[in-house]
Length: 147
Image (cartoon, rainbow, N blue to C red; front, side, top):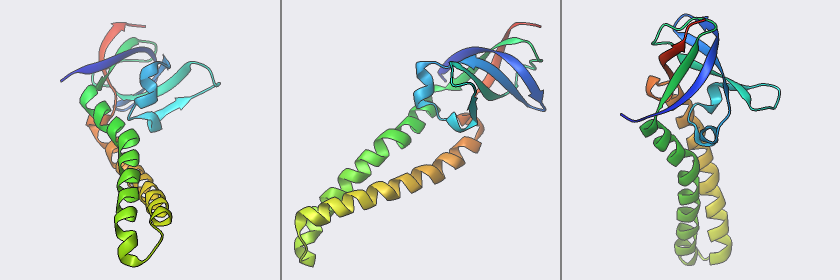
C-alpha cells in the first residue's frame, strides 16, 4: 500500500476523528476527500478531518496518509469517466441517428451532452458512497511532535 502524506497540526479531536490544520498542496486538486476538507479565509490553510489511528491530541504536529490507490480511483471517476461518457454518447448518437432518421450531427451532440450529464449524476452518487469508506479518508499515521 502506497501512501501520499501531508503534515499538519491537530486543532480538534472528537472521538476517532481529528481535525487537522494543514497547507493546500497540488495534491488537493485530485483528492478524493475534498468534500471533508474545509478551506477557510481563501488562503493556503485548510482543515481536514482524518481518522485518528495514532491517538493524536490537540496541538500535536502529525503526518496524515492517503492511500494512493484510492486517489487514483477517485481521479479516474472525477476526470476520465465524464470524458469517456461524453465520447461514448457522441459515438452512439452518430451510429443510431440514421436508423432513427435524425440528423447524425445533431443527435451526436445531444447524446454526448446527455451522457455527460448522466456521468455527472453517477460521479456524484458514487463519490458520496466512496467518501464514507475508510479507505478513501485520510488517517493520522504518525505524531511528529507532541504539544
